Image (tube, rainbow, N blue to C red; front, side):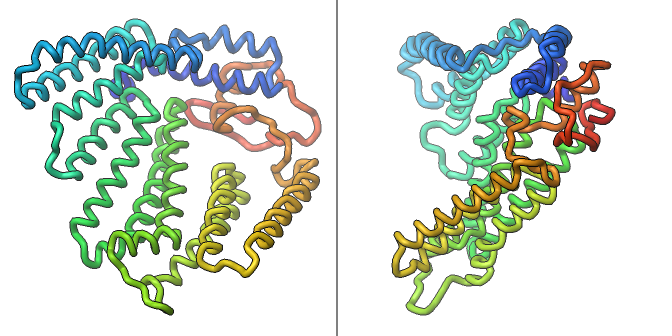
Length: 392
């Protein structure tokens, strides 16, 4: 099923993902040189992904090359109407999609090489122009077309920028629909957005547990990250108040506040605490980080509306208190306490426990891990997913 949806070779993607995470474990000194050599040999992938510098260069050169070809072609048909340009743009967009997938992805095993991104983004732009033209009648039509195209690229080509764009387009669609309906629905906009992005987080988590495929791991991290951030932003008092005034034309007299003001005050204060609590309880670094971020946003929000007489002194005291708390925690977590430590044990970007289990159970076999003997953080527990089994 997945093989028919994704343009890339799934087996090669899994090898590349495992190899990448194993490299992080090796750099974190959790794998020996011999173990890293065995993993590199067993999970060697044919996918071509150059360094970030080369990817940028290849992307720029690919765009210049396509403009060199498309520019004279456009000049050749300069006398046709816009409808003709739209048809030509649509045909060229589909053709570039086909060339990118067939020649680069299927035959030459390019994956995030810079050339593939140039082909995908150019195709999306040309197809969008072919469908919408230069002057689309309704903004919501642009949002729907953008959502469909970016969702297609995010799923079939595993493009993370397209994924972020598709989430943005979905929020734009929802916003336009609420504005078009108006009335009580417009007044309930913050609650609708909170329910939408809360559901997005919950559903993405359930879908991740159901799929249990490592090639979608980055996608789910991004979706959950954006969902958590927008869930808080949708109920933040400052955002709701300012949008109520600018979009709905709400006029607030002295002594009056926005509707449901108490709910939004409470939401702004309690969500960061809830994020912290859930992150500590579940040992989720994602929730802990968002607890820090939303806490700062809440402080800024309340300080904006309730400024003390000496704001500079207040900020200085708050900063000193945070530094003191950080120093106390830094000293307290010298030793591992309830699964928390100040040490960076894994030097990887997403801290994937599933991939750690895969590398351990499928690759290392009878080899032993190069880890300390005393109360190590990964001692105990079990991991599964994407075919992994056994205990760590």
